[in-house]
Amino acid sequence: MKSFLDDDFLLQTATARKLYHDFAKSMPIIDYHNHLPPQEIAIDKKFENLTQIWLYGDHYKWRAMRTNGIDESYCTGNKSDYEKFEKWAETVPYTMRNPLYHWTHLELQRYFGVKEVLNPTTAASIYKTCSDLLPTPEYSVRNLLTKMNVEALCTTDDPTDSLEYHQTIAKSGFQVKVLPTFRPDKAMNVDNTASFNEYVAKVESVSNISITTLDEYLDALKKRHDFFGQMGCKLSDHGLEQIYAEDYTDSEINGYFERLRKGETLNQTEKLKFKSAMLIYFAQWDWEKGWTQQFHIGALRNNNSRMLKTLGPDTGWDSIGDFEQGRAMAKFLNTLDTANQLAKTIIYNLNPRDNEVIATMIGNFNDGSVAGKIQFGSGWWFMDQKDGMEKQMNALSNMGLLSRFVGMLTDSRSFLSYPRHEYFRRILCNIFGNDIENGELPNDIPWIGQIIQNICYYNAKQYFQF
Image (cartoon, rainbow, N blue to C red; front, side, top):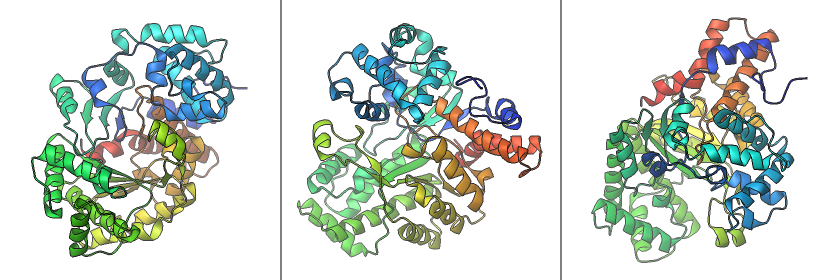
């Protein structure tokens, strides 16, 4: 019987262990999509205790605690930091076979050297050990990043963001490259006219362009896109239920914008046409700059209206959606490809039923100009766990080239989330190791070791050109 979370965790064969320890383990990390707050990197923040760095803003943990019967006051409420931690420690033993159990103990080991299992009995000593370390210089957020061998990371930023903290970081000489990502979801969200017009006002303010027409709105957003480019941005990102690809005319979109500015509400068809047009505009700008566009599709968000009203979005009330993905995605990509304006693209799928749809879709538009130009992104959100990662990599292997995959990202708001890259790498090496030992792949360790290193690091380095 193997020990829990030992050096060979998730590595079932001798070959898998060799691939991980000799090839994958020491590769640097390029974390090309996350939600880390750049302000905390700029000021090199130190956290006062384990709750602050671990539980604040972590809706994964909140969902588990609620499911375990923990009152909301211990999740997002006004209980003390230690009381909240106690309730998390009380919940952890019930998370067995949920990835939270693995992540929790990987993070305790990798950052703090704590090898005890977290439960109510060990909670006090673990909290003290970690909370005593966190305020020290070695545990500032910059040192946490360098400790995990992070070479570059890309935050997720609204077009109206000043990027002042990215500028501060760049000037500081910090060895980790911290770059912004252009996330214009609010710029195309016309589901609520009042909110959209409030956003247009923000775009006016930051761009110094008065906006009354669609052309002026696009000029202002393009100015922000250019500014992001000047700040080193190489990627855009969109969080969508599905890619929008309705037919529209320029005159229709101009008319919709005029009506929105008058406070009118568009019907559902008009909303979809407006969003479709905006996606094309953004995609064309990305292509012009040689950026990579990312699409996170398939989340059904804000399902609990009562809790949305109480706590706001991104607090743990989202799930996998069952949207039709294939036809509109093909139409969108084809529209850009036909005009020779299709940028490098990564598509992240949240519903595993669509894995094969995405894995085959990317092959329609990989044109030989760039290795892996169109990517099936790594398991995302509910799928960034062992089963989800294996399903994504198996679909990509069967229908594309796993060897050209740009690998893992954290997609996290936590500075303690980087062991997820280790988790991914162990799973990757186990897949290849099992195939070798089953005689399904040749025992060519140097070549397969190189493929492993490419997926872990070199493919992303070549693809993004940071």
